[in-house]
Each structure stands twice: as C-alpha cells, then as structure tokens.
Length: 360
Image 1 (cartoon, helix red, strand yellow):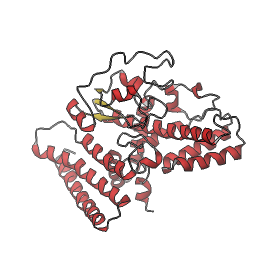
Image 2 (cartoon, helix red, strand yellow; image 1 turned 30 degrees about the vertical axis):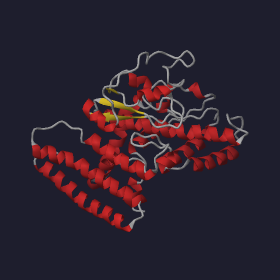
Image 3 (cartoon, helix red, strand yellow; image 1 turned 120 degrees about the horizontal axis):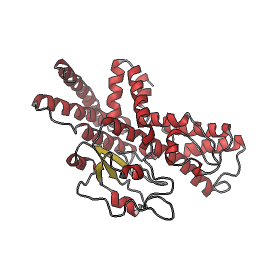
Image 4 (cartoon, one colour; image 1 turned 135 degrees about the vertical axis):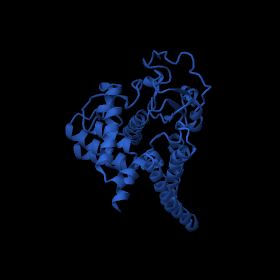
C-alpha cells in the first residue's frame, strides 16, 4: 500500500479528529449517565468498566473500528477477548448471546455515530453554512417524530439544533447536511416550506428531553469541540507537503468513509441501514459537490464557471475512485481511470487559472 493510499484510505478526517479528543480522556463510570450529554464530546467511557486497564483495552478496540473501518463482528471478537483477558464480569448483557449482541452493538454504533456527527458538525460550522437540513436515516423502525423532521430547513444557529441535532437517540441514523440558502437546501434533501411542528420543545415527562429525543440525547454531539476539531484537521493539512495537503483537502470535501455498510456509520451522505459501500461513496461525492457549488456569484462569468467546475470535477474523480474500489467491469474501470486522469489535469488547470488572477 502506498503512502497516499494509507492516508486517503482512512475514514472521514473530521470524525477522526473528534474521536481523538475523546480517546485522550478515558473516564471510568458505573452507569451510562454518569457522563451527561455534551460531556461525551471530550471523554470516552463504557458504563461498568471500572478498571483503567479494562477501559483502555475497550478504547483501543473502538479506535480500531473507527480508524480501520472495522465491522461490528470484528469488534465483537475483540470485545470477547478483552472480557476474557481482563476477567470482566457483571456488565450489562453478560450471560446470553442476545445480551452480548445488544451491548456490543450499543458500544460500537454509539461511538461511531457520535464521533461521525461531531466531525461533520465541526466541518459544517467551519464551512460557515447558513442553514442545516434534518435528514431522516431510513431506519427500519423509524421514530414518528424523526420522520416529521425529515427535510426540515432551519438557520444553523436555530435553537432546534442544540437539542435535536442527530443522532438524538439510541440507534438513531438521522443526519444533517448544510446549505448556503433555502433554495440550495433542496439539493440536499431540504423542504424549505416545512415548518417546525408545534410543541417541538415540550419535554417528555418520561425522559425530561423534548418529545422524540431519548433520555440523555438532548444535545448536539460535538458542538462543544467544533473549534478544536477544525484546528486539528487544519494542523494535519499544514504538516503535509503542498501536493498532499491539496489532495487531502479535496478528499475532505467529497470523500466519506468507503465502508458505510460495514461500519454502520450514519453519516451525512450515507444511509448505512440500506446502502452499500459503493452507493454510499457515489452519493457522498454528489452531496459534497452540491454543497461545494453553493457559492455567491462574483459577477464575473469566467470566475464563477471555474469555481463551480472545480468541485464538479473533484466529485467526478471521487466517483471514479469508487468505481475502481468496487467495480469489476474492465471497460468501465478503464473509463474511470480515464476520468481521473483527465479531470485531475483540468482541476489543476482551473486552479492555476484562478491563482494567476489572484482569485484562488
């Protein structure tokens, strides 16, 4: 594997930055709500893991799943080995296959979902998107309220996001996308005419959270660390040679984790419950292109054309790479290779044109 492949084969860079913040602060807890809501932005814990060595092993297993794109089954194997090695007993779910399956799924999916959401939120905040769009994740057993919010378009600073930004419950696969305008929100699933349902802030007496939000989930995962995540991602870019930094920056725009179905990450451009990895990669490229093309006109047709074509070509390259990763037809793979070669050359040409005119 080449160095470039090693870099770009990693999952979503902003997710990794958000995850590293949590990984660096491991806190032992007795029950799941010993750490409350936004406290999870800066800490990793597994309820009932009261020994530091045990928690460190569990953290390493989750880190492996996030960093390497490990499957739930591979995480379960690691979990069983840790439990046996550490002699851990008394954990919720212990004693039955069903209990173990439930507990490992909760640990695995909760950490992947919240770290992805935290990274994505940091990216949207850093990008200065004016509007957020709520997207339902097509769960097999959808929550009625979550369906009601699907397509909702609100200002990025609307108080709704402080309590309802997904994931907002156990197993929630909803996600948000960003838009520069209400009209542009339509391109990423937005329904600008949809209004917030009455009583959206009303707490459920059973949970203390707004109706439709699970207990302990009435917060925006990652909101308290958005600046720190952005700084970490940009520091990585600054440390790379110019050519690699430019390529990685382009990847950050359009390349999402290529193993969506295996990892179960409910990302903004993927619906892991019913999309294969290849389909998720293609949709990620398209959504990234649409978001990047939402820009204010400069009044210069040439400049506006060039700026719009760069993300268009970057998306074409990203989709061609998905074909090379998953496609098997020799003819189409040759087309993908040709697309990459031609589009990368044109991207360089367009960027050089902008730079020569001081408009990059």
